[in-house]
Length: 404
Ligand code: PMP
Image (cartoon, rainbow, N blue to C red; front, side):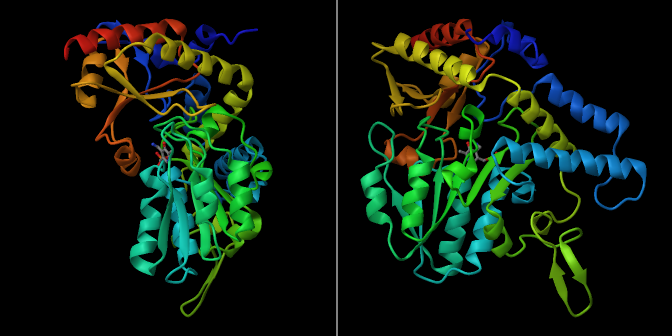
């Protein structure tokens, strides 16, 4: 049976609002997704009924909240086929990469190599640049081919005895390209490198099994996965997390502290200094429950259908350039309109109630690779409909008329 987007929309209160007198057409889910009622209610319930700080109380509310917080960790673990001790709560995808880079950086030597790709988000570039600046490591870049796929031959050629870390996007937030994480991990491991995947986009659109991929680290954010902001997940293989030094110091991450000495807690608590994002973890757990209860194959098919429909309708628009056409790509459409700045395109689309992103998408090396300074981006989610896809194309046609 086809996926019923109309039914699912009822779970998202915000989708019934209007923008500029028009029904909202929200095509910016790759930046941040809207929130299902189940997740909103889980956070509200916690605040209204059972809330206290975690891991430090002997009273009922503290115990209940700790149980809910740790239950969220188990949900995140099950969602990606990890053990719960392999799940660290962070404040987002960005912090998760920073945590890993800072930890690994403590044992890297000048001249060690880190392999990234041209399609990375700045979240998976800048923390490694810190190591280039501070430790003298060398960054190597896997090129992106014209269609938006990774140049795998070049990747293979970059790997060598000096490669210590490979950090790659599982799915590009600009091109929609979905990389074969399992193959990329195998090649990295053959070279003796650790491999981290930025799964911020991929996790939303396909089931992820970190054991099958054989990722050493896998990071994603809550807010793109229909969960709240302020929460992200770092998955790390048990032995890899155990080898990482702490990222921040404070309460809850220690074994014992004296005036002369300190020992650290085991993962994951070693990496969760201070009061963690308790409500956000509970919200993310509810979002994961909600999503895991949907037919994910049908969702993927639905999103693909929306993208294919839009792409088909755009054929023959000679004023439009699409960036990223890799085979098997996800439902993200990046484009430029001849003679128009992407910001202007987005602002005019907004007049028609259509929300898209415009700018560099925190991927400046990729923008440069494609010879553009910015692009507009429409990203499709499970709650978008074919009518919305058509409304987008119609609004885009009217928008272009401003620049013709
Ligand atoms: N990586 C990718 C591919 C992303 O799309 C984003 C969000 N734009 C991030 C990392 C950053 O994640 P967060 O917003 O959770 O810090």
